[in-house]
Amino acid sequence: MNRFEKHFRMNEEDCIEYIQEKMPDYFTGDLSCKEIGDGNINYVFRVSDGTRSLIVKHADLYTRSGHTPNSLDRSALEYETLSLEKTYCPDCVPELYLFDPVMCCTIMEDLGDHENLRYALLKRETFPKLAKDMASFCARTLISTSSAILPADEKRKLEKRYTNPVMCEITDRLVFNEAFTNSLGRNIITPGNEDYVKEEIYQDEELCYEAALLKEGFQSDRQCLIHGDLHSGSIFLTKEDTKVLDPEFAIMGPAGYDLGNVAAHLIFAYVNCLYTEKDEEKKEIFTKWTKESLRTFFEDFEKEAEAILKTSTDPLYKSEKYRKDLLRRILEDAFGYTGSELIRRIVGTAKVKDLEIPEGRREAERDLIKIAKSLIKNRRDMDVSSFLSIL
Ligand code: SR1
Ligand code: MG
Image 1 (cartoon, protein in one colour):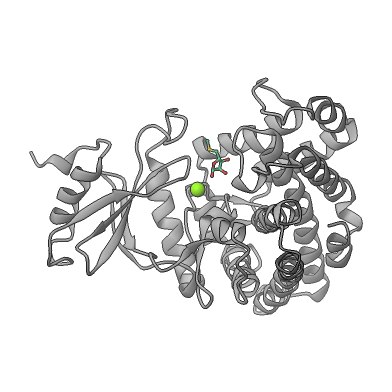
Image 2: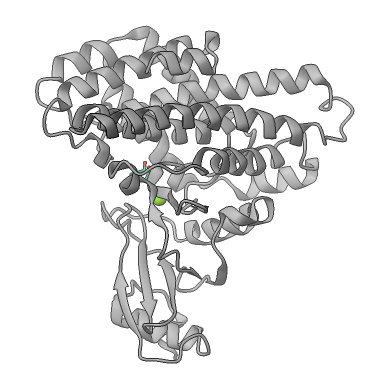
């Protein structure tokens, strides 16, 4: 029996042999391989012969960071999601070469010349196309899979396929229950903020009620196909090009969840800069750019989403009133999920590098909690300008 006919967790040496078998004509020279993943869920190998390279994304039975059991189907779902997203937004998804359901591998284009957005933002790099590209990615993938655009039978097929229960349970727990109630008692609070978090989050009944509504929306609103984990670590880019990866949390859910994730991680970069940047000029340029990017992201999303919605052929969904109302609801959700994403990364176990602030972390986190609470509680009365005014 061939080594790769039954699933096992590969190491770098296995991966070289694997690629020699699966992509025999791709390389000409001797191969090297390095595991370069830094996510929590899967393994990412870069295979190269010094001239060409490619990426193998490999799922194991256990998650990479917590070694907790997970479903191997997440790998197929991720590949299917990337393929679907590519049909809606070809420029924002890498080239896909092969999917192997046995070894749970997606073999794809190496974006070696692209930077991970989180790390680039922490170096205060700015990207003129980021906001527009992400607005476009979100509008195309989200609105095109909503009831107004996708034929009902196709949408119901997506609803059946995209239950993704194991990954969604992680979100139900980490983003909502643990974040707002410390339900498992394992939240990690910055020393000095223990009482603040207890009083301002766990004991704030109105906030927890709003968090329940957001959780209910995430669990029961089958609005469209969402990426489900659209943070800055899932985005790779150059000044000219933006690519979105890692949709292993994909689910039929509220569009605002993806928009809120993008916004929250731009806010993390913004606050990291405010608290850690010593060079005043750099600070001025970067914080201005981040705020402008947030504005462009939301406004361009609305414009492109509206243009897509106008193509609806459904006699009810093509009404202007419906269109405006849908966009309003998506924006409200986006503000709310921006808040939940901010809170869960501050108090929960899945931290972000942006919060590694040597001096003033406690204060930075308090600032962010205030912003998050205001977004969650006041989301129904906010627009993009009032959103920006609380930063
Ligand atoms: C155990 S997974 C922790 C987090 O990492 C992923 O990227 C998701 O954001 C998840 O919530
Ligand atoms: Mg991920």
